[in-house]
Image (cartoon, rainbow, N blue to C red):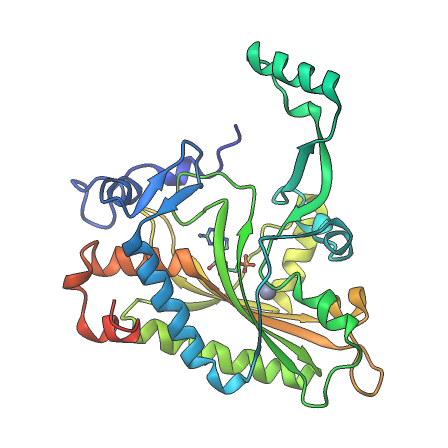
Length: 319
Ligand code: 5GP
Ligand code: ZN
């Protein structure tokens, strides 16, 4: 298996605590995360979920003035919409597709024989037309596009979804399935820029309220291949994506726990999202990594919630 980031996931202690077990081991021992045998795929305890719920509620409270339409999708989307998104151009290495057995009795026997012989049986599966959601906002664009031109003051949608990315890792902050909470804005360039600026301020303020050491920086996405470097350079030059970084992992650089994205007219063009005057809509989104923020809180305030600073617990609705 291609286990990424093995080298930067060495169980070295965090700054100055060489005697501490690795952060992931501590989370597993405390039962906050539950091992599945697959790197990056974990169960969550009630305590972990109470922090996640508190974060989500805090984001809802901060975003109340957005009058966002709440939409919830299962963590998968249709293959057609996935193709339209052009995700495969940028991140083919991260995408996950759902396959199922679609054969007859003879095929079933073949499948069971493979299992019995401990041989690979997955080539007996076929694509289902269902693709795992790579980012919570992806299912939103085709839905809004189908409704026709946007209202004059634009539109904000509130989404939350488990997302899949094929990047098995021993760093607890790099999961294969994790939740992303987003506000997605569709409208004119001015509306999107104002939305993103507002949320960059709010994201930092939330980090401070949670007493976390936050730092805002221009992002570096892992665009695939040689061409990907050019796209990544252009994304940086145009300052299309900012991230809120927080140190979480042992002996590694800080982790992106929120992102603030301006897609320009990329999704508007792909899905024909129209402004009231017929022009192409611009889009942007702010994403909160629910697991990463939960892990950041556990890292900085400890695994015993009763000892967390009172204002932090209050910000999370009294965890
Ligand atoms: P982006 O689409 O910007 O890569 O991801 C949006 C947010 O989702 C990130 O800022 C981060 O908080 C979260 N995220 C991205 N990748 C991972 C991951 O591998 N594991 C976890 N737990 N969260 C992630
Ligand atoms: Zn998004």
